[in-house]
Length: 132
Image (cartoon, rainbow, N blue to C red; front, top):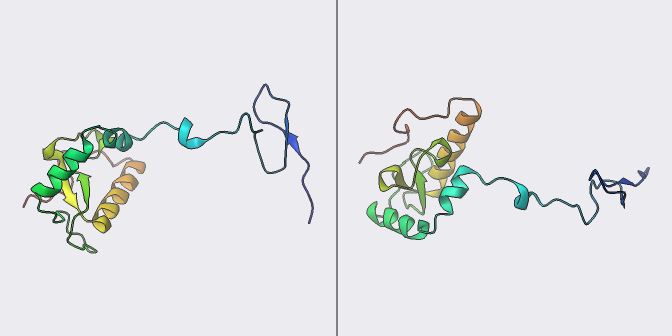
């Protein structure tokens, strides 16, 4: 097994030597969760009223999943944005619905993939909207 040589810290003004496999010295090590910009959904979920909003939506829908996907378990434990925060949706009651975990994961993943492909903008209601 060959060992790689130590190298200089990747910070432009630092001359500290770091072990092989590391890019930065301890003083310049980056913590991505502190430097990354928050996603739109994280900003929406950071609403100080979110716990109250979430509880109200779950009670409004009787803790029943409104998405009813193929792996639905029926009991809602999540609150879903019909039009995602990343697509300009808000936390208004008309844009929120109760969802079970499998349905919420499936819809969130599908919406994220659509957004990556450039087809993520909603022209009104999501196809996952249930109007009961």
